[in-house]
Image (tube, rainbow, N blue to C red; front, side, top):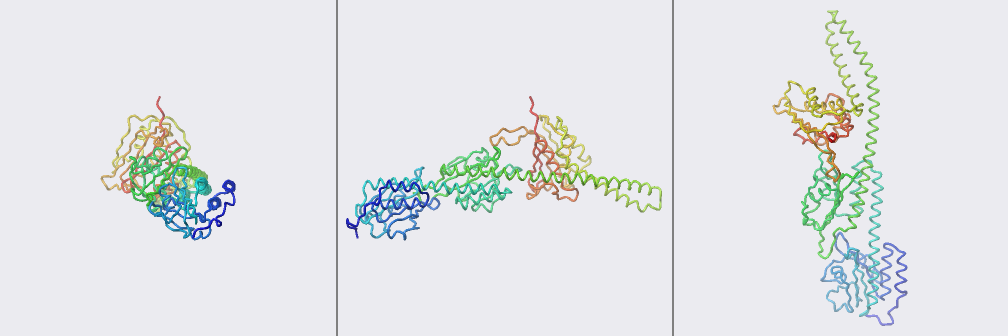
Length: 578
């Protein structure tokens, strides 16, 4: 039943006073006050504020004012043009007013006493409808031009507060991310925290993190919030491959709406079917101006055709801020790892040096005793039965000396005496010294004629090459006719130029064989001290190689395919020719 004129209350205070009060408020408190203000200044009986869900595309009633309104809290309204005035306004983005809702076919009853209704769309700074402010009155033709103007002002206030609330959520996420990244001790822990923030705090529908595997020069899936979780470590992108690979190659962010229309799009390894993707956003993770990974988020097309849920420039800036924090976190983790590794190497170096000295003194004495024993045996025929024992002693002393030499090489691997040398000549000499003259292995050598010289420690570099070649002998089946070692030299680069930074000329030495290759689980371990799958030695060989090469300012990696032979690649800085 409609109210009589005596039941109509005048506003308790003007709009200006309400706005002054609301300017001191934030978040939900401010929005609750807005709804009460709308109710009061328009003499309405009911007021609701329905917020659009960017993930699901529906309206949810989150704020109400007026008698009997609490039952409407939490109600979800579809966005459409066919029924429901609030739904119609959200779909069309146009305000709507009716002086008699009983004559309005779009009207769907929410409160039984309503006669007049006015709904105002609330837009964000990108022009998208994000909420609807709805006022209802028991009087016919209740709303005036002043009421409409007041609703527009309140709509602007709502828009500003919703943006502030979103900023606060994102700011809190960045603070939390920075806090936990500062305390991450490993890359795995860091990646796990990034995925946690993306999934639980920012509530992205799909987020995936790809990290550079330097041995393959490919960007491998390291973490995901979606069905790709089961593919971590299995799928990867090369530089320039698809939109994700493009970001990795160029070190630039990429925001695409309807990415399927972009010529770079391949639809590879995506979190849901390509034709369901509405928006694509990918940012590079940079460490010291080099691309070390990429963080990608996708948004699924809304089931509601009236709702635009695509990523915006705000999302782009947020992702860039996250990627910057991740890059800083990665650098911190790697610095800690390098420090720990350095301290370990120093400790092992001191230990090996002391052990080498102490054992060496004992070995020297043992060798003297063995020489004396052999002399006595040679003069006493009745002692000939002890001759095998003397030989066994001599053999074991030789093994101890070999271990001592490996310790010494490990300690001195980074102590260089460099001179300008011809790498091809050095490689050829290494082959002559190490490769057996009568071997069942086939040797194939391909040396580039145009190599510039390099500044190297000749003895140390020969030691590194010898270690890798001898490894090839050990792991190949010498009974097979196809057992082969191939050694190649050529010009290369440090690959940094692919990330948009100047590439340095490098001499590339490649040693590959037809053995069993390196198990994928061991590729990251073979250069660590004391890791070995051989009975002989201390497991320091490849660690010594790594120390020698890196002390020259170079890189060494193993990039062979497991089961198809090992392939070691050494990159050494070349001397620029004038």
